[in-house]
Image (cartoon, rainbow, N blue to C red; front, top):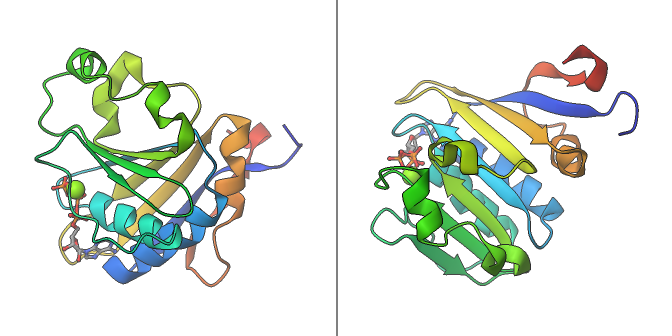
Length: 172
Ligand SMILES: Nc1ncnc2c1ncn2[C@@H]1O[C@H](COP(=O)(O)OP(=O)(O)OP(=O)(O)O)[C@@H](O)[C@H]1O
Ligand SMILES: [Mg+2]
């Protein structure tokens, strides 16, 4: 880890378009095998983030909530896998379904309700914690779990409202 490199950052977004713009900018950093964990209440904006991320990957198909399929796959600059664990009872069920496995090595995987993976959550990941619902602005915290994911934190556009400065590793 480079000394002082930010591993987390909070950004405020005032509407869905701003959340999508943030996600689209972050998608420029996507590499095969990446895992993006989307965490937030019902209606927080996890799917909005996924839509923006997909747009940033050049995906032209409409990205919808994958609530009724286990995993949706889209073709862009690299494949995007979109998973929603809301209806899965527990992490064991997710793992039994093979949702987080080597099939995702070729693309980037976005997981809504990722906290439901519990102990099955891979150690290396970008966490996107979205706080707020309804018409409230959202506070979106990016947390790089694993140094390789710090590049996402660094890629936040300066034009987006910085709610809070990032923390260097020593301040965590
Ligand atoms: N700042 C914001 N960021 C994201 N969405 C916002 C924001 N402000 C308002 N919204 C609205 O909140 C809703 C978020 O819906 P979305 O489906 O993305 O939530 P979700 O977290 O995926 O919910 P679920 O848990 O049901 O899957 C959208 O209607 C969006 O327009
Ligand atoms: Mg959703």
